[in-house]
Length: 450
Image 1 (tube, rainbow, N blue to C red):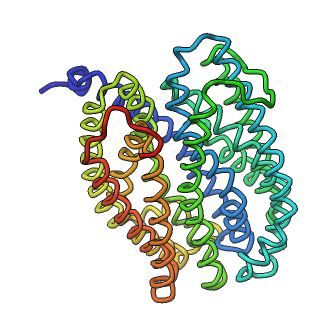
Image 2 (tube, rainbow, N blue to C red; image 1 turned 135 degrees about the horizontal axis):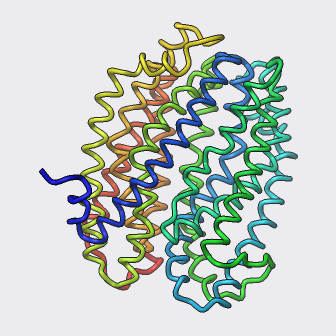
Image 3 (cartoon, helix red, strand yellow; image 1 turned 120 degrees about the horizontal axis):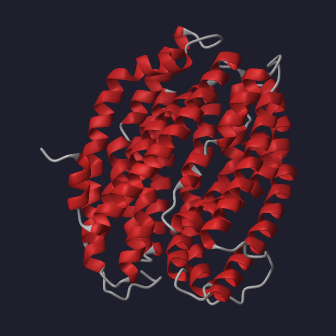
């Protein structure tokens, strides 16, 4: 019997790079998600299913959706550009990084101010179904989540710089805010308000952003002094690609807010129930698909840069099938162990056995998305490496439309479980679309118009 190390050594170098990167990402994700799980356990112990958790979940999703959307779109189009930029001269690289940082700092500051000013209207529109105490707590939480918009953009840029060098330490540092919140919640004398959650969030995001910036500067061998100009030669293609990709990302980004809006209309504490199930589900999603997806993009971009379209496509399709099979196995095991897992993580203090039953039921319906989510993420990286952003944007818009219709149909019938079922149906349709597109070979000179 060959050892795992021997089998890994016999793989083609491109498969081996993805596998090695995925193992590193999975390891970092495991540590990071463990920190996140401990944070959720602490929040459940101190707060239970309460107005404070409703407020935190609602504020986190609604306030983060736009900066996270921008980072998601920027990362997909920026990493292939940064991979190619590694071969440019030092002056060109420094100019591009400096201009990127300058515009992100300016845009992030503006976004933070607008978010803070507009929050009363967001609460009035999206949080109409929240209890009044939860609405007041959400308003308090904006002291942390408004500046987090700027910090999220800077963190996203630093993470993209690291991933372009196939360094994945940013995945571990994603857990920094969770660790700080965990410490703050446990050390708080009382949890009558959202103060521990607010301060933990603000300090955690700040530490994460500064730490990643330092690591990215080490990886690139330069800081890139921020300045507002667009003289670097990478800008024209990047702006076109980012503009197209942002359309799709914005469409998909509405999935989180529409879930919060739907849950807020289902009654008190539905947001909290959905939040606990979603965060446990994200642990499984992250350890499986995200590890391979994050490792694959820089490798596929490098294969495309070498002009080997066929190998990139073949590599991605093989990994996609493998991930679907892994997703089926995870779904089956997760369905059986859902009540045990929820009880193990959350059932203590203010979190009761009845809460466990509610959260595990919601979690089970969410698990149905696993095979499709696992399979689609690697195909997303393939199309991104091929610059097929318009097709990706079109699929994303179709996904959002599917999600909105499914929420409307299933949430009134199944409650919070219907929201999760709608997400699973959305990812199933997404996977079908991506397989159909990826299966067709593309010409070697693929352009943004694709």
